[in-house]
Length: 309
Ligand code: KMH
Ligand code: ZN
Image 1 (tube, rainbow, N blue to C red):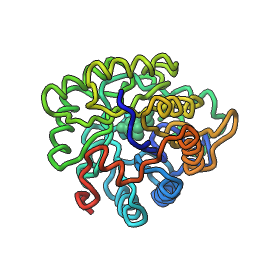
Image 2: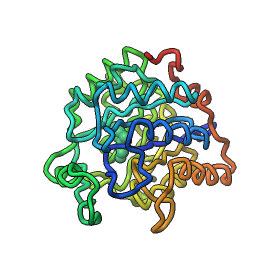
Image 3: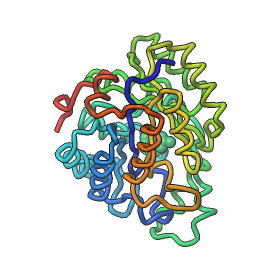
């Protein structure tokens, strides 16, 4: 794997997995998401990965909610915006694509396979719920898989790719790399490929470091120098996997979307706090930090002007 010239820190500020009752620091309202994104960018994050939520924290897909998120962040930072097309497993594909269709972002996430994506275990840990919707929402993941068919992957690549959007390929297992290779072969997934190794999701590959080494060995075989690695793990292993990725010469992803923690038993108070922590690791490793424009150059992104306001 070729060492990234500079390390891109991505921050996933809120997501759709963690729920309000788990932490008071999880950004919920669009205004809180904007504030979290700006804070993360100011702390050194070049890419901001975004989901939307209604004011009560319920995952949102509606463009009117996204209107309160994307333009203010574009206004306040020069960070690259990476809009989720994963949304939540409870959304339809059209709902999941609505935001990226509306804004034509520089980057969008693309989930490289259907899978169980189970976070019903949250219900074992939360004893008092802030909102009615939370418990059925997390329990519902036990029965409902996260569907990403080849048809929907192709449709996303064609439709958003036409507008110049490029992708963060979310790979939750080794097999997802072979799915990505299929779309590279078809000329739909275009290098340089940003491969995001996702570890520790129940239903995906576990958070064991030998799995990251194996993912890199497989990606090297399939894509050679045509890919750039990024990696993270959900929950307590988030920083260890980001550190491992940086040590390998890859990029990193942090954020309250995937881990509410800043250390053992200590809730992170902000996304910026996690960015500062991984930035210190990256700089202690002697690796240069990428600015948003470095990320644009390294990943072949279309630039801010290409985003539809
Ligand atoms: N929360 C991550 C495990 C997406 O938004 O499309 C996966 C993710 C996917 O961020
Ligand atoms: Zn996401």
